[in-house]
Structures are given as C-alpha cells and as structure tokens.
Length: 319
Image 1 (spheres, rainbow, N blue to C red):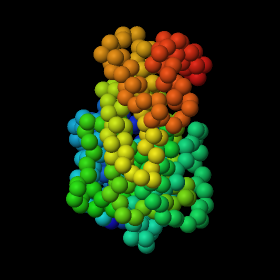
Image 2: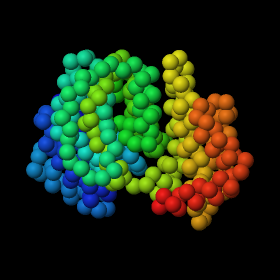
Image 3: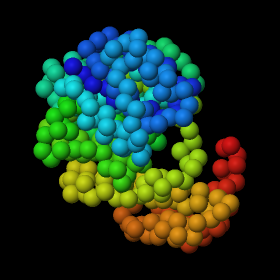
C-alpha cells in the first residue's frame, strides 16, 4: 500500500481540486492522510466530506504547531510500504503514483523523484509522457532539488520507501525548522538512500498562482530559515562531488531578502534587523560562487539603505 500525506490548513478555496486529483489516481491501493491543523475555514468540512464518500481518505484533526509537526503526524500514521507528500494547493496527474510505484519497485530504489512543472495560470491538461526513468547519484539529486529552490516543493514530487524514515537512523521533521524543514528532510532522504531514480515525465503541477507570496508575513518560522539552510550546509559540506557553495548562495540571497523585508516593515524589530544583517557576514565572499549574489551581498553589507531604496523601487514595480 501507498500512503499519501496532505497537510491541510485554511485552504478551502483550492483543496477540492487537489483531493480529486488524489481520489482518481489510476493506482487505487492508497491511503490519503489529511492532517487538518485546526483550520478556521471550510477545510475541515471538505476533508470530512471526502472521507465519507471514499474510505481511503483518513482525516486527522490535530493541533499542530506548524507544517513540520503536521507532516510528522501524517508520517507516524502511515501504514503503507511507500509514502509521498502532496501540497494541498497543487495537483498531480492521474497516473503519477502508478508510474512512480512501478519505477521504485522495478529498480529496487529507495526513492524516485518525478519531474514537476510550475503553472502560472490554470490548466488541466496532462501530457502523454513516455520517457524512461534514470538513476541519479546523490550529488545529482542534491544539485537538482537545490535548483528548484524557488518552487519550494522539495518533498512533494517524490515517492519514498517508508524504510527511509523508519530504519536507523530514524528520520522525522525537525520542529525547529518549519521553513525549509521539507528541504532538510529531502536532503536527509537523499543522503540515506542507496539508490535514487528520476522520472523525467511531468507528473507534479506546482500551481504558482495559488501559492501566497513567500514573504507575506515574516513569521517566526521564516525568520529561522537561515538556520535550517546552515544545517543543510553542514550535512553536505564534506561531499566531494557536490558544490556546497550553491547552498551558501541561497543562504545569502535569502538573508538579503529577509533583511529588505524587515526594513520595509512599518514597525521595525531592532533585534531581527541586527540578526539578519549579521547573517550576511556568515560566509566570506570567496565562499560564494554566483557573481550577482556576491555583488548584492557587498551592497547589502556596506550600503544597506541605498540597496534597500533600489530594492523597494523594484518591489513596487513588480506589485
């Protein structure tokens, strides 16, 4: 059996679309675990309705302190030999799990990564895909998931053997890192895997127009984001065929954006501003690889308010 975990919190406007894409999967031997974290909209009612009409849906109404705790609840409840995670805002094509399951079993793999696409406008057409799955090294998998950083769906286009999580050392989501906790988990799964497959066919659809702006609110979780990236850097620093500077670039870029948004707040938090500014000095410029990142870091360090002025102008045009 295959377990699919869907963390749910106040997504009633988009939830039905996602759950229908799971309900009508060509592979039927699945359980769909809906972890409802005390939603205040109609999300809970939608979950219960799907559970009434299809017994494969399991609703867990649990108080969760954040995304990582909700994912842990789903992970602990999973009864399948394989597990996947789906963002309630997105959708998957109708044959995704049948194809990924065949790939992981036939190749005796620990995980299989599916191709994903970012949809900027609504479209429901699934492409007919026939490309063959290939083996990826750990280094290739790490590089590829890091390249998809902007999509922020590090867990959701993958199928894992449940043993990756339950065999020693046991893996669970770190509650200290709600932001990038999924990135951290994906990295841990890759490092623990003996064999990783990649399916180049487009299966997972990241619906960008339905996702909220990343920096809408600078919550505690978002402020702790750099710490999660530092842990990922620690885990990958010694890999001989992986350029960890790519993640250091991400750390610096994220820290710059965080600093700009903190400066843009009406009520500025001095402690948060100081911490965000210090993050820009965590790595030397020689440890970075992207010239644009290096230049932005130099500007944000030495001419913070000039950089903020131009950032604000650009931000206003985009909005």
